[in-house]
Image (cartoon, rainbow, N blue to C red):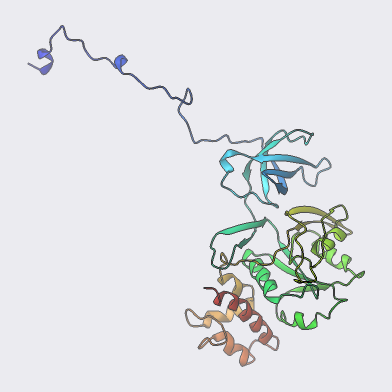
Length: 347
């Protein structure tokens, strides 16, 4: 006899229909993390960001290219979207007044220029995406040039794999020769500019075919240079405080501007002037890689070698002192050590 025979025929039998299922309070079907593929998304360049709205360029380099206003999709709320990004856009991309499209994805970035609040802060702030050049603008005087700030720009550029360029403005006020000696040995192209004598053709030729981010201390004439290269830019310009010697912040946002030169076009990315540039996020190994000849010799260094002047048995120092790397090697080593010292001084 089985236990089923012990059941009273009068007792109700259990049935699946008696099970009560609590309905989904938010929808008629279970929630899913799967998102639409957005196969119809258009690729657009992010030109600027303003209070949660993104100006993007659709159909770039085509006859009907036009600007569109967009917001970010909810699933991208934790992803930084910055000037220079290549965004996947859906919705109304006509660009008509009152329309709004939506950014649903970001294409893989070729480079990221980043900064941190200070050298101890490991949290990075993305400045611009997909730039392949950085144009550092510094004044020969008014305000006085700060070599260490330029060093920091160069470190950030080398870390991001971006080629650095340097423009020294206001050379009619002071001779920049001594300042430029600080950068002897670096593979750094330098332009000089005086009042009424901007080398626009030379700088413009260097911009063609590139996406170049302009950086510099407030008051050095960066926005003035941008306006001269891109007349329709209309970037605000300011002056230097005679008491503090500091420039007033004028450009308050990062924007991409089309540069059209005699030999082709490029992109100028203007950034707000800054007085500091934290490097807490930078990998120091990337600095040595920028000096290809010294990096090759560094393979002979003892493990953990700092390559600084007091480093014992440093193969780079020994190779330079022996003349093995040529006459210019000493200047290149000095430049490398100056950049590395920026990190050695970090807490």
